[in-house]
Length: 67
Image (tube, rainbow, N blue to C red):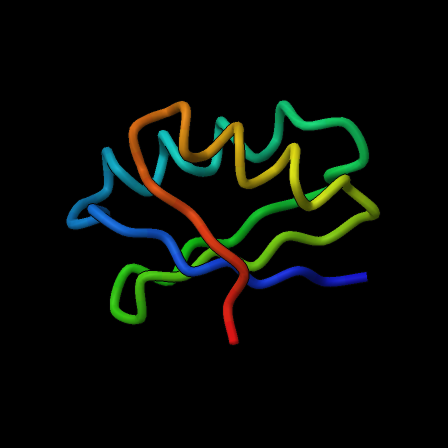
């Protein structure tokens, strides 16, 4: 399964690393790929989407389901 989230406030490699680290720590996540240009993160695995959004938001990058 793949989940795409819109992530605000990402502007650099440090931001991408922080979002990736937050995502990877969520149970069920197998991988995470940040797209800085589009302000998104694509997460593979079978995570609880609410927990994923909360973890990334708690890291300082407001996240929401990508439409």
